Image (cartoon, rainbow, N blue to C red; front, side, top):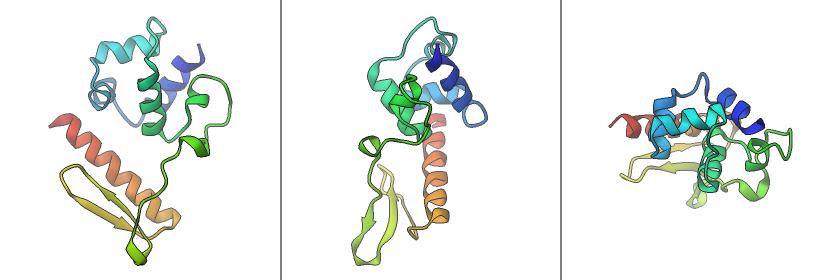
Length: 122
């Protein structure tokens, strides 16, 4: 079961089962069942997992061994006006900006994960 192995490997070191379950709004036993292969995630959850881990649905499901997200599954970076900065804005209106560089993308991703973790705990 490719999905179970890939999900387990991607999750470890980033999220606990409980944190991932909270981010996906499912019970932690559900994530455990996905990782053990006793239950398959719904399509919407596979898509959410791919987005959360920065990979593609095709990689998670074993259609490809390339973990890079496919262009049709990637969200375009948001740009703000003529300043050309990357912007991540939370539902509560908190805003993070960074230059459109590799370090800027890393910063935005780091902030996104922190916000998701805070939401999961809160």
